[in-house]
Amino acid sequence: MPRSKHSPAPVAPTSEAVLAEDVRSLGAQVAALVAQVDSLSQRIQILTQAVDDVREDLGLVLDASSQPRPAPSVMHITSMPKNALAPDFGERINRYTASDVPPDEEMDTERTGARHEATACQRGLWD
Image (cartoon, rainbow, N blue to C red; front, side, top):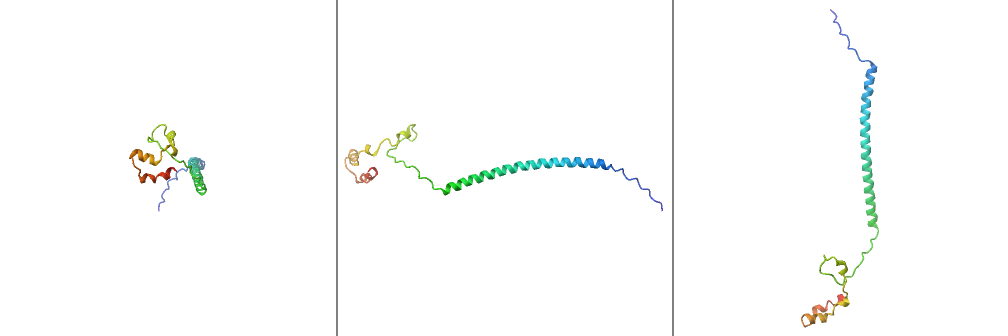
């Protein structure tokens, strides 16, 4: 049987050339990996800051709800201006006191000439 001639094997690149190509490829991959790790590191820092802010806000809310709240200040109103949009509205509040208002009997007599029992029940508001 005739022996077939084997074609000569292709010339393989030298091992140094292959090694150099592998090093370049690995270098590019490492550079890409470093960039991705840096990006992830920045995102983690942002998320950590956001969690810290939420934790601080939640702590303030919980602390504020556990402490007794001071009673709101009370302002007794004796007179109120008609125009709430007036520029001097704040100055006109409480301009008149209870002593400035005439007694119920005088008001009734002036308006109707007779005394009404309905207005007498409002006397307790000014006493």
